[in-house]
Image (cartoon, rainbow, N blue to C red; front, top):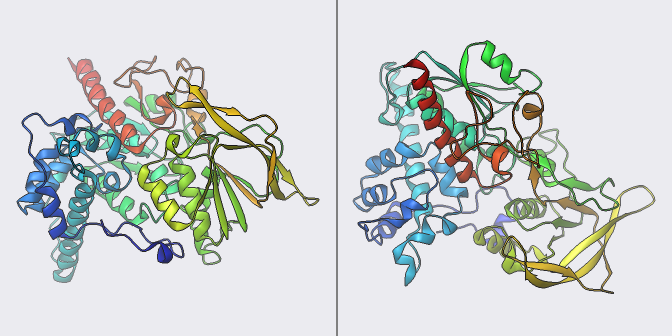
Length: 472
């Protein structure tokens, strides 16, 4: 797929991957074998009708392809950009046994973008004619017969939005309560513009509004309202999808120095609050001359690539295992390499060192080697005795994972939690409280967008069953 050249993209926040042309999409779609028992579909957490939408692309029927996508996926333009297809649907593609698998994610993005462009053109045409027909409804927005029961969704991230979309299609009166001033959760605050443009997220959310989903922002669960408040207001089911936004730290000396950021804060300042456009937007982001990013997941890659775009001269990923064990997507690691991010592997800081003014000036680090595999299946990092060294840096971004947001869980009496503070829930999101469901990172801990969406979809079905049983 065409991309911006590395030397160009490091100086802007425009999207790196440029997407397929229609000709490229049709050629790629024709590589699909249309298997009688498609394994690719088994690898999709939101159950997308993969062979069906790809066949429509191969036929040049993009409208049908879009309809097939939207039957199962409420956010296809998002998923086409950030879903790790290489470890899910594409990993099960039969074509991939002897060559590259069919690029399912890229085709999904193309179809979703095609539909958005078509809708924009139609809206512009209607505006020019000034003949808006309020009774018209797109096929993708069709819902079941309206039901009187009200459902509350706490959190407008991937899990909450996916759950809300399906419940709206089932005909329920759905309201999503979001703590921030915009809906989208991690899609808006956590993923950089160059990977997921905010305009794309906003258009996807607009499509949910057309389904009838009500969105209320600046509503902080556990502060502005509680689960009990919602139940008293007549919501017969509540879904908790508040995610994992509480940053983890290493617990080493110096983490309270000036110039140390949680990746969550750093990316929120840059993405949601548009800190990259200071002073047009008054959210300063301090990016040092030499930046160390601790961790090697997608968040770490996002932070490192963002720091480069903010003007850092040298950015290093510091990771205690080797590159082979990095949890980030292969594409993100490749893009980081292309853009000049340095990879200091088998390295781990033991102390962040500050100057007389309390600002970061470097890190004391240890070299590591790999031992036997641990419970994750990856080889365990073992410190090398006598390998201490000093790394000169003036900013440190900590990207070693996030924990569950605690406000809702701490304010909900009787809600069973796991040891790490995540909500105990079954496969379909049922919690210890009747009528209260949960899914996504608040249950599993920090994971991927698509897994959270899959959890939201399962909970929507379980909520539907629960509410129907109350009626009978």
